Length: 322
Ligand code: SF4
Image 1 (cartoon, helix red, strand yellow):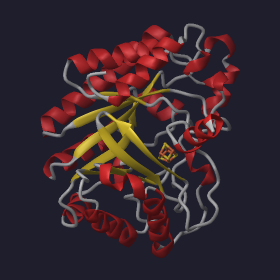
Image 2: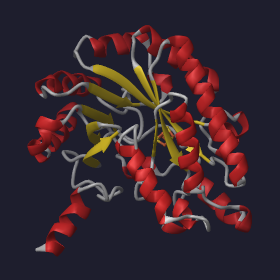
Image 3: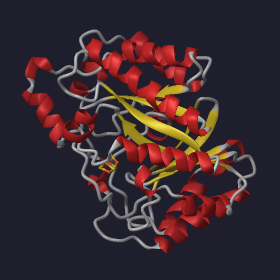
Image 4: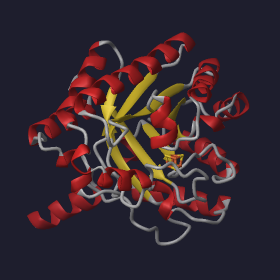
């Protein structure tokens, strides 16, 4: 029986595997009930039309559909997840709606489905926050005001900023997004009292040294904190130790760099997160490679990596006091 319980935990608990092809259009790419910073979150990766961007470091859209998936199918995905998570509905206080792209890009995610999901989520009484993952390009006043008219819950936008460095943004990551676009998005969030959870990539260039990575991550977080403060936006940082996603140009460049490439040192990532927390900036860590990398191309492959730093990072993610 012990083996069976271990297997169930690994299959359906935090180690649940991502990157599995969905059975059909009525099933999502992934979902998980998880705890982040004192919140019990139901994270859903909807199976919708593929992200229209091709960032050089990202393999996420590869398993998404090349064709449009209509409102009914997306709602079926939602109902399927709610059924699967039914015994945890009473403890949920957050739902994260994502699709390996941008849920506010209505050329990929049916707008009617999103509005209904938000409206129907009112039935989950303990829910306090709805998190929407999107690029900042798709955030505007009309969309946010419309979403807010459908729910009494707090809305947060989850968006990738990655790095402040323009050269890395453009040439290494292929973001195709000026910093000014992200700043304009923060202004929109400020006007509608919407929170921001921003992804920052730790060591976003394969050729970056460990010491340069610490400085770069710190500078990027400080920039976001200042922009959010100016606009009255509550900011949370998700600091993601960079992994080389198999099949991406970023991965190939890292491999071609030979000994000049090393993944991030997790103990450094933890230290930067602690420094920022001490200054009042909530930071948690993205510890998964989302099923897109091997252990040779994540922080686990850094020669200085220790299990102790991983335990510390996991504990930090449970609560801001951790
Ligand atoms: S990082 Fe985001 S915008 Fe870029 S390809 Fe991946 S999912 Fe699309």
